Length: 487
Ligand code: TXE
Image 1 (cartoon, rainbow, N blue to C red):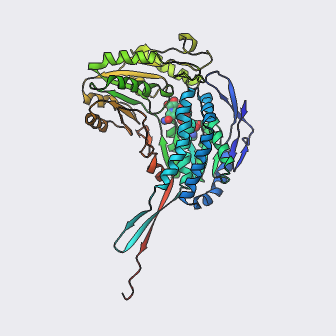
Image 2 (image 1 turned 90 degrees about the vertical axis):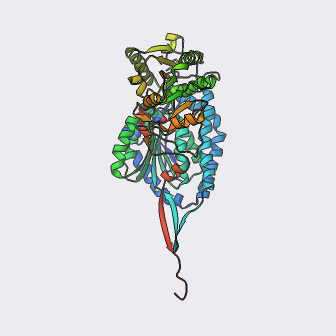
Image 3 (image 1 turned 60 degrees about the vertical axis):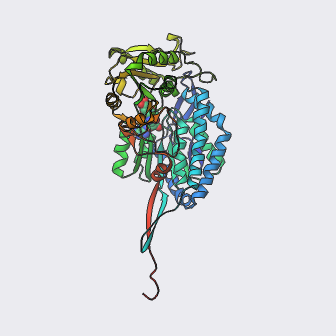
């Protein structure tokens, strides 16, 4: 049993109140750690420490901060297995996934931004009689609030560019998945990152998260999480004129055109729907398949899903672990029951734990990957974010029809199109209201590209230049050319 601490001003400390929260392993229902139940008083200390550290950190050159990022990447690489184990324990995700995706990408995020920084050119604009120099500085103190689905992956995606651009940080991981944020804090402590540059405050969203949003010393907020929480973040921070980046939910379409390579489309649709038990904001939770190939596609897709191996997260062969908690499992089950009420048919899955012989323990939040047919694309299950191992399947005849179906949700984060005619795919992609479209692939990321959503999926973009832009303020310095002698 671990007892985690906050990391404030270069020291590991409990919450000032002394209160704690239990961290539960969703595969066993057992308490695996106690974390501080911090309050605004702890945020106060963290923000003050971050404020006092920021100017010196910002005074380093970009290259010096890039060297720090490389050192962090090296140190996290050495803890790759420990990170994967902690992430799997905290979230119930398969260890193979935690290794391949979570631990690897957490290292890559630091490495990427270090390399990216070294490729930056000075930004200048020449006039006939003057020269403009665009200088970039850190925003100041930034608040980073992250969710439970990809804990260190998403936190490092914010911490790396924030540090790079000269900011100091007050970070809050999800109270449900605090373990790897602590590994990051320990790593930064071991590396002797200057005191106060990175502060970690554990606790509940409405207490610590809200404290971060409201704190006057915190100039910018980068938030990834649910759309409902995003609304609170915006309502609190916008009137204080804080810079805001919001990465929220998704209800993404997987569109399969009649000329798709069916093997590729089936594999792609399975991966898009069920990676991390469907708990990725990019997951393709609505499949739209051309009517002419629908029977064949559905038969093969359902066969693949039914054969997925559900098991203990620590088992190397497991493809589907648990969802994040019993509470979340009940939310997902609510939607499965609603689908039946709405006239849907469960094509496979729909069962939990021992009931369907699914999970190894009745205490674990195991839910079989579930495919639902027969629903209108306007039904609640097909338009609201379920964020679990559930996908709905719909058919269409014409491209205009599938555009209308794909856009019939308040979300607009991502989607994928499967076709052998790339030009048709690209033309269709432009008609979909979304931030990201993949053609014949899913979650294939070049970290230089913009990442983010439209509509209720968020505001702003992260990745490459977009992250550097968010985490900095620019000052344009316009220098008049010296007058020629004798004028
Ligand atoms: O998210 P929350 P939850 C979606 C998904 C999921 C839903 C709820 O639909 O079912 O969100 O998940 C902190 N002020 N996504 O409950 O609550 C909270 O402590 C400041 C999509 O985990 O939004 C956590 O650190 N902060 C998503 C973070 O916000 C607050 C991934 C996210 O938690 C706060 C995860 C407040 N008032 C869930 N209340 C994606 N797009 O990747 C909570 N928090």
